[in-house]
Image 1 (cartoon, rainbow, N blue to C red):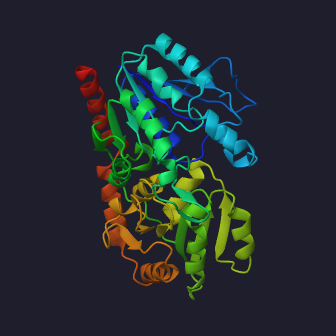
Image 2: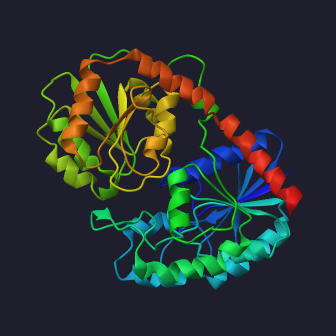
Image 3: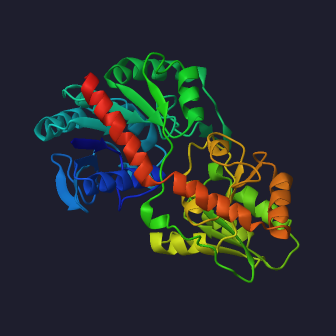
Length: 402
């Protein structure tokens, strides 16, 4: 089987979990003997708008092109404010992307096309894919079909389904939806939010949880004894991720034998570093390699997701469980679908600093190794192998019904 993935980013160009997911699944499918191609973007200084650059990464054929727009997905955080309105307009339907993707797909002749995050590529990838005689499966990682703000978050708060975006949703319903044969998402919450917005009313939708890479999910429990009670945050340091909430909750802990490790980068990092300068228990480590991330998961007694936004199905939870580390998460979006209270972790009221602080204090005072065992067992049931088994079934089913 030849599967072609369309993703706005692909490692080593990485911002979030979606592009890591595409890589992990692609490489697992290659190990199973399938042919896998990925159509993605290249940064302005490393790609071309006129043709795809090609490379093979761990058996996956990766084709990168620079979108003819104001900036590429990997560059969006450094873009000037005046560029963004122009970017949004072109990103509705980019004729360059349509022509180049259609031509490449016709030459590749895949059996299945699997679209993922497409910000920076525009809806044109779907019309280009629609010209190919192959089923198109789309995985929802965010809310880009509902709003130009794919996290439904602005000015420090959730914006929800805005009426002003009705024309935008109608455009997507008319241009994108007819080409999609099936919708997948790791979160039922995300599927429901799209249906509430009038999307995919007659398109088959299925919740398919992600999977943990076998390299992170061994048979032995990876519990490491440390002198301090270690609390971990791993992710982008943005307002919607709620790192400031975690720091406020942590600062209420009087214990000296607690430590907060914050991994990642983002626009809030410098401000929060300055704020935390007087507390030696709080350490910012910046962006770390995957090997270093594994080590921090193993050292952590709990991982915290203090999200303000409708988080989808955070890969951080899967990765944490794979290292036998329980998770304390905000009760919002798809997070509660992955945390069983008192079993694999705890939930707290979103943005409630006192509630989170109480959960951290309780975890410190009465740490239960059974939660680590439960987290490990959860990861064993939700492996990348199991996830790809189910993906293959979806692909074959759609090919048979095409």
